[in-house]
Length: 489
Image (cartoon, rainbow, N blue to C red; front, side, top):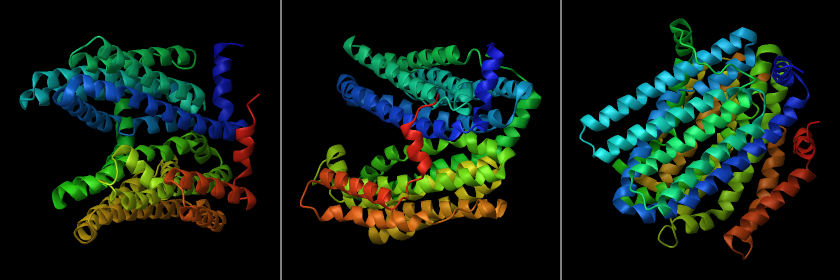
């Protein structure tokens, strides 16, 4: 079979019955890879902090924060837009789009890194921060370029390869950091670890996709302008979405005491780490949703209904686990009793994960339907709710007020997305039959809090009871069970 035939076969997988199962198993793989990458990152942190000391590690975090901002701005939703377009385009149009997207992303990121490096220089930052921004920025450039080349893997549902590349990237970063610690290196080489990781994962990605897409980027001002015009509303929506969830943390530093800010921030860090999970899981099905939005309304309606059911179940089980195990989580990351007041705050923030799964589901649905304006308006409304809610509730309820404001903003965002989806097509509204079953199972699982046992044990028992009840009530979509039991031929 020729390379072109192989590529065609991969492209057609979205139109086959295998797609759903591949997306489900791929979502599980992405989740496992995220957990593995998180563990790998935790391995290097204690060694690096002890080796660098407070001052140097503070500068490392400063540069990392700068790079995070650059990445957030220059990413601009281009990965999700790229997956959507790669899914709905074909032939030369698809290849031309991907080549131009690669060139555009390279240009945007290079400009962002140059601007950030210049800004640190003219504002009088220490030399190591200026140099570190440039070096780590090159690593960011390599990583975002790699993400662009990996778009065909996501669009073809080759999520095992995507997961492996993610683990490789973090493994190279962790290994490089540990090597520099052993060698007794100064601060600057630790920024070079980003470059080493970026080069390694980019080369591995190019090796995997070399027969699927052309590797040479393209520079077409006309195409670039079209991409930017299409992505701008979505990029603004993504930027607002990035901000609103963190508004309470920012505002707390201005309107609350240091103690209450610390209490909220400690709980928030737990939810922030777990909050990636909804997007990892739901994004696995994004190519299917995008293709269905182009070709088959019935299939789109079916896919969104199943995603709604899975999202409701997954969000509830995570919220239940956090609610029952909150004291254990706070004890591990901060210590008790100093941060005991973070426990109820974490429980409230954990509830936001239920709506986070729904937000992820309906966000990808609206993106597939090209409803960029609706995404922007909805995210702006959520930001206003987070801002007003925090300012109104924090003076009365302290950190708990900020948590309630964040939960309210997430809930409002989910409602706004649903309203926008109904306006596009009322037939895409979910059927709510799974909700009573999930609520009943969650209520029974929550009774584990009455057990005279450690919080970790309560959490494990509660989740087990929840799962057994879902099976007994036949609330779990049969496709999910079947997909996890079988392999593709």
